[in-house]
Structures are given as C-alpha cells and as structure tokens.
Amino acid sequence: MCDQDHFEDDRKQFEAAGLVTRKQFGMMLGAGMAMMLPRVANAAPVTDGDVTVKTPDGSADGYFVHPATGTAPGVLIWTDIFGLRPAFRSMAKRLAESGYSVLVMNPFYRTKK
Image (cartoon, rainbow, N blue to C red):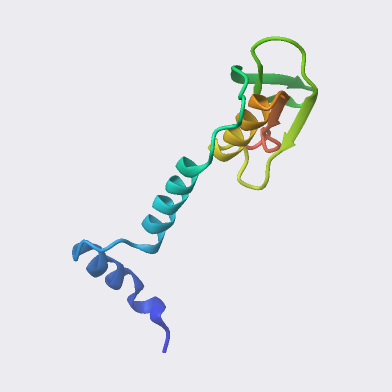
C-alpha cells in the first residue's frame, strides 16, 4: 500500500535509465529561470563582499553590497530558515544595481556560518 518501501529501488532504476529526477529537474528549472532574469536597466556598478559583525554572543556573518560610487539608502534583508544563500546574494546585488546599499545577515550565525 505504501511506496516508501520501494522508493530507493525505484529511484536507482529511474536514474540508471538516464532519466531526470524531480530534484534534478527543479535545479535545472531554477538555474534556467535565474539566467532569464533581465538585467537591471541602467544598472550601477557595485562593490560587494562578505562582512562579519561582532555581537555580544559571537560574530555574525553577512553580505554587503553597495553602488561603487556615491551614497545610497540602506536596505536590510533578513533571510529565511535556509540562511545566507546565493538567492539572497543575488537579490541584494540586484537591489544595489538599482541604487541601494544592501546588508544581508545570517540570523543563524550562533549555530552555523
């Protein structure tokens, strides 16, 4: 009645046939969609890098990106349960290209960088 007993065997058989799994399809779809995103119109050149913020209970890691010249309003991006990952870095960079200084922090720095 339950497919869980045969899942691993079915997966191996599926991959041996050279077919794409749902996970592989999802990763390819996500990468394809990211490549299709248009560039920001009149995108400003940006400077980016990883930062470390000292707190009373440790050092929080983050990502800071801002326009290469001039001043810009600030934006703080607070990540979701998966922490600081490439998707948030990409969002921050797109905002910075539009003229914002963006800081993305890892709220889970106490457990994992």
